Image (cartoon, rainbow, N blue to C red; front, side):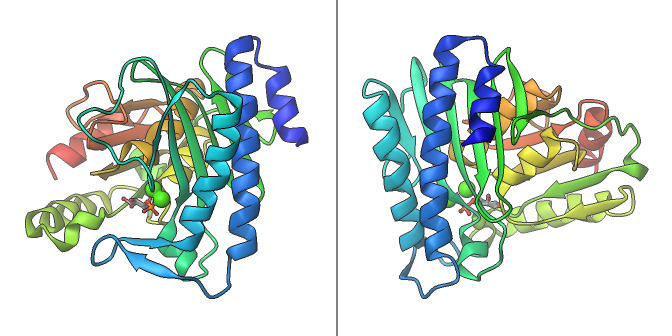
Length: 278
Ligand code: IPD
Ligand code: CA
Ligand code: CA
């Protein structure tokens, strides 16, 4: 718990500190569930042909909800496994946005790269977030105007300003199995970016991709068709760490927008140019 207390001590906004405190405790509880279930036989169901949901996703979500709903019964919840996005999803007012297991495919294959992600929005704006990797024990958190931290230490985006020196990440949406034109677009951008960047990773957990941009290990990240729970917490981190998130046209990003380009801000234009004219 030390790393949470360290971050809380640096957050002067009492209300957001209370939000972070609950989100942090919820993420640790869920991380414990994931650690217990990791690398053991699991019940796995399919939401789509390649889109899985395991008993670990469901148990982790219950662990998160138990803490958040006890601490803040009045705050609405958008959680991946129990409350899908609908037209009625509250974009106004306070809202928790929860991915109980980001990186389910990795988890199901015992590939140790996944996280719990809990974002807090007010009127659609990402105001706070926590991302917890229970394998590496890295706990990222941020609160608007107060900073972003990794295990209690302040984090900042990188200063890389040329694509040639940039380590980038991307992701492939589940929708590629249904939409041939999406495969073509994803591959086209990848083909154009590969010779320009120093390296490109596809590790399989969008929340961690964003946390890694926020702490400077990655210089940029892009993906299409992400869901609000993939990005809500990571965007809060990125903003507080000095990064930039937009759609591919350069317009404001919100977790309800289907295109995301996140960067250290210095490289934003260069990455955007390749995405838009591959
Ligand atoms: C997925 C991961 C992956 C990204 C997919 C997401 P899930 O989330 O973040 O990296 O490429 O688009 O849906 O299903 O593991 O929670
Ligand atoms: Ca996810
Ligand atoms: Ca998930």
